[in-house]
Image: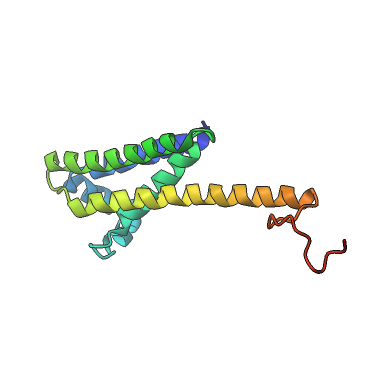
Length: 159
């Protein structure tokens, strides 16, 4: 397991859960008392509500870090388990918000969490696929084979 992405994923997850469970009065205090904390919140809260990009971006970032933290030989079951864990974190946060004064749980937020996690997972899996295909192409090219994989000599190839 890669340590740096794993630590970053854990810290971001804990920070997101802690923020989601803060009462609204505490968030207002942090926003007014610390300008570095309030500016990003102002930006995120200005986003349109149906496309709550804060949830999408946060869970996409968490998914990328979690996927990068997994060992390379984990396989699709391990990656599916990581995705399910992110969905579970999103559901847990929304359920816990029911008990926090000034907060509300939202099915739309949960849906955005799931979509963000799916986007992040798909990005890492897609980039790994492209990287493996490029590596195979480079190996084939260095061995003098046609990178496209055709074994037949073309019309311009001398016999």
